[in-house]
Image 1 (cartoon, rainbow, N blue to C red):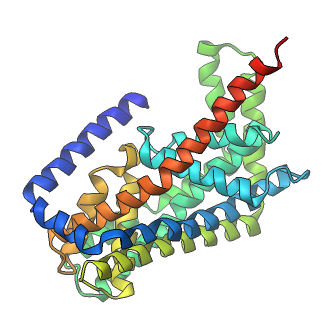
Image 2 (image 1 turned 90 degrees about the horizontal axis):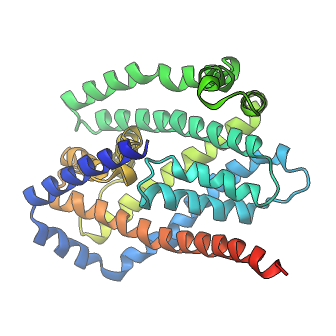
Image 3 (image 1 turned 60 degrees about the horizontal axis):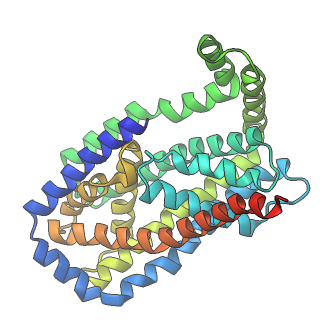
Length: 328
C-alpha cells in the first residue's frame, strides 16, 4: 500500500505540474490575490463539515461506549486528525482510519469495535458519495453543460452501482475477515488472529444491524458534502466569477467523486485539480480560474490540517514521556 501511495503520488504530482504548465500560472496567482485574506474564512466554515461527520461517527460508537468515555468533542478532534492525515500525508486515504482506531483506544474502547465503526463509516461514505455524484450528474444535465460527458458519467455511475451494495452485503453476511484469516494463517500462524477476525466480523454485523443509526450517519455525511459546495460558491464569488448554488454543487460533487475514486493518490493531488478544470469548462471557467479554486481548497486543507496534526503529535509525545516520568 505504501509503494502504491508513492506511485500514485508521483503520477498525481506529474498531472498537477502538467496542468499548471499548460495554464497561465501568473493569472492563477492574480486570481488568488483578488480574494486575499478572505479565503481564510474557509477554515472556520470547515468546522461544520467536521462536526457533521463527528456526530454521525459518535452515534455509531455509542453502543460501545456505555461509560461515555468518548464525547462529541473528542470525536470531533479525532475527525479533524483523520481528515488531516488523509489530506496532507502520503497514506493513500487509509491512514486516517488507522490513526482513529489508535486514538479511540486511548479512551478505553476496544480496537475491534472502533475498527468496525470506521470500516462501516468508510462504506457509508462510498454510498453517500455515489448519491452525491448522481446529484451532480443530474445537475450537469439540467444545466445543459454536459453533452457527451453527461452520458459517459451516467454510464460510469451505473457500472459502479453494485460496488457499495456488494461491499455492504459482504460485510454483513460474508464473514470477510474470518475468511481472510484462513489465507493469512500459514504466514502469520494461528495465535489470536482467528479470534480477532471473528470478533471484527461480529462487530461489523452488529453495527450494520443498526439501521436507524446508519441512516442518520449517512444523512449527516451527505449534508457535510453538500456544505462543501458552499465553499466553491463562496470562492468563485471572491474571484469575481459568481455562479449559482446548483453549479457549485455540481462542481463539488463530481470533483469529490473523482478524488475519492482515486483514493490511492495521496491527498488527491492532481486529481482534484484536473476535475475542477474538466468540469469547470462546462460552466465557462478557464483553467486558471479552476486551478485557483482548487488552490483555495488546498490552502484551507493546510490551515485546518496542520493544527490537527500538531495536536496529535503533541499528545503522542506526552504519552511517550509519561512512562519515563513514572519510572523510579
